[in-house]
Image (cartoon, rainbow, N blue to C red; front, side, top):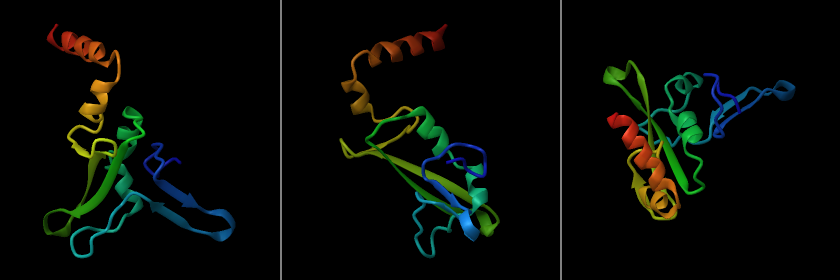
Length: 120
C-alpha cells in the first residue's frame, strides 16, 4: 500500500471505507517510556520501503522503533534487520544476510563486478 510519503510499503495500512479513519504501521514496536507510537509523518524518514525494494529475501525480518530525539523535539525511526534462517543480525539490510548471499550461485560474480566498477 502507498504510504503518506508516497512510497510502497507492505507494512503500512489505511482504511477510509464507510467512514473509517484508520492509518497504521504494522511494523512498529512500542516500548512504553522508551519509544514513541507511530504517526503518519514518520513515513517521510522511514527507510523500510527502500529496504523492501532493494532486498526481496523471504527470510528478512525487520523491526522498527521510533525514538525521541534531543529534548523530545524530533522523532527518529530506527530499523533493525535479522535473518530468520540463520538467526543473525544483518548490518546492511539493503544487501541482506551474508550467509544467505553466499548460498546463492552467481552472486559472488555480481559483487566482484560491483567492486571492479568502484575501483575504476
